[in-house]
Length: 341
Ligand code: ADP
Ligand code: MG
Image 1 (cartoon, protein in one colour):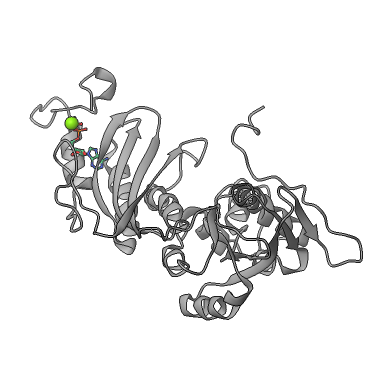
Image 2 (tube, rainbow, N blue to C red; image 1 turned 135 degrees about the horizontal axis):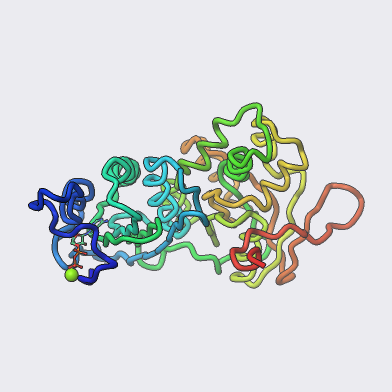
C-alpha cells in the first residue's frame, strides 16, 4: 500500500485520543487476520507465501464487486462478504479446481467498524465453508468496492476449460438458474413473488458449486460458471469450443422459477438472460448420463440436460418441440458495456 493521503484510513491513529477511528492496521488485525493452515506466511508481511502440492496446477481468478454496479449500497455487509468470495469460488468451481488461498482488496468510504466486522463475518463464513485461507490484501479509502484474487489447485492437466466441448455432447446446467435474477427484480419492486425467500437467498448468498466442479473432473468436456445469463454463457462455451448448440425449450428448468411466483414468460427470460446465477454449465458425452444422475443425487443438486452441442459453430438454436425447425435463440446475456448506452 502507498503512504499517500488518499490511501489512509486514519493510519496510526490508535494512540491519538483526538481520533476515535481505528487505524488501518487495527482493522486488518481485528477483522481480517485468521489462522491460515494452508499457507507458510499469511496476513501481516509484505507478501504471502504458500506452496502448491506436487503434481498440481495453480488456478487463479479475480473478480471485483463495485457498489452501484454489482450490488446496492445498502446491501447487508454480511451477505456482501459472503458473495465477494462466493463469486470467485464459482470461477474456480468452473475449472474443477479446489480453492485454497485468497487475497482481498477492500475499498471503503469510511472506517465503519460495525460494517467491516459484519462484512468480515460473511467473508469468513464462506471461507470456512470452502476451506479458503485469507492470506493478504489491501485496505484503502474510496468508493465502496471489493476485489478478491483466489488461488486454487487442480491436478495437472485435469482442469475443465471452456474449449473442450465435443459435437454431440449433452449440455447440462446445475441448480436453479434464473432464481437470483428473480430475487433482484423483486428487490427493485419490478415484480412481486409469492415465494421470494429462495430467490433472495440465491441473489445474496449464492452457493458456489465447488463439490460439483471437482466431481466433474474426468466427466465434463467443457465447463463455465453462469454469471451473465445462461444464453450468453452458452454462447461463450460454444465460441471457445468452436461449436454450436440446440436447446430443448421443454427441458429448461422453469419449474423452480414458476414455484417462486414467476409466470412462464418471466421464468424463461430470467432463466436465459438473468445473470448472477453462479451455476455450472457443462458439456458431457452421452455415456455419462447415468454417472451424472448418480452424482446429482449424491450432491443433492439437480443437473438438468438442456440440449446438445452441434458442429455448426456459432449457431445457438432453440427447439420448441413443434414441427417448425429450431429457431435462433435471441436472448442475449447481460453485457456490462453493451447495456451502458
Ligand atoms: P504494505 O503497505 O506493505 O503493502 P499493507 O499496509 O497494505 O502492507 O497491509 C499490511 C498487511 O495486511 C499485508 O500483509 C496485507 O496483505 C494485509 N492486508 C491488508 N488489507 C487486508 C485485507 N483487507 N484483508 C486481508 N489482509 C489484508
Ligand atoms: Mg508491502
